[in-house]
Image 1: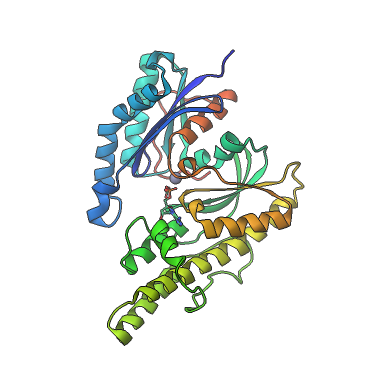
Image 2 (image 1 turned 60 degrees about the vertical axis):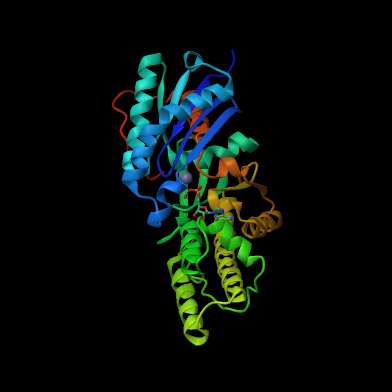
Length: 342
Ligand code: KG4
Ligand code: ZN
């Protein structure tokens, strides 16, 4: 029999997304961003996000079905992000999914958003369990050993900001456009990473925990002293600060990844593999450094294509299909969870 046709829905942050999958074939993946709605406020406003999700989820799902060339009646199961995330958006998604599953009389599968990110390398690269994953986004930063669709071991993570958040704040401090990751990366390409010596937080501490808030404070201090000394920032100052910041993030992530790899390899996995996911995985400097590290350590390196790295619903549909294959489904008591550690 053909693999089940799965409709996935995602609405846990500021992207409304729907996707249709059959097996490992992504038939469609629609992502409706909300940047324009939140821009003026300097961050995602939960009420505005929830309202936009509620207004757009149906439309988004319809478009995903259209692009996949299937009808709603053909859908075999509904997978939805049930947390963690902004509760208003998660609720919208869960209620929409419950309505659809009831109307179609098909299974409902509540998916952990982080599990969606963590399982994506199986969709894109067919990785075998267990593999090591670094999840780095605007909201998350953690090392996971992924052992099964519901079996994750967290080796460590950030104790304060996520790296994407640090990129975004650095951009704000330096007057660069949001999202900060791409604009800081572009500036950094023209900068000298050695001009400003920025801190490498927690590098001396044992284990895989990370910290990024001190880095942002260091950027703020450097900016203020430059502004005080010369009345403003020159283009080269901005580029050098971005380069220094990015190098610090890279060095910290590389060293902590080295430790995570050691812990993972001590289990002697049959097919050692490392995957990076989340929006920050788009960063070329970071990617190249981690790829080199994996080559040295004898691990296969994978990174999902960008569209499946940042928030999307294909990863939710995929995680849903993995759960469905295990017989895991939910009923109308499925709850939207603002917090839901893996
Ligand atoms: O995974 P994502 O789309 O959303 C969540 O946070 O869940 O990640 C978005 C984050 C933003 O903070 C953005 O600045 C960062 O990923 N990002 C980057 C790059 N592209 C996006 N950070 C560093 N370098 C990039 N090229
Ligand atoms: Zn995410």
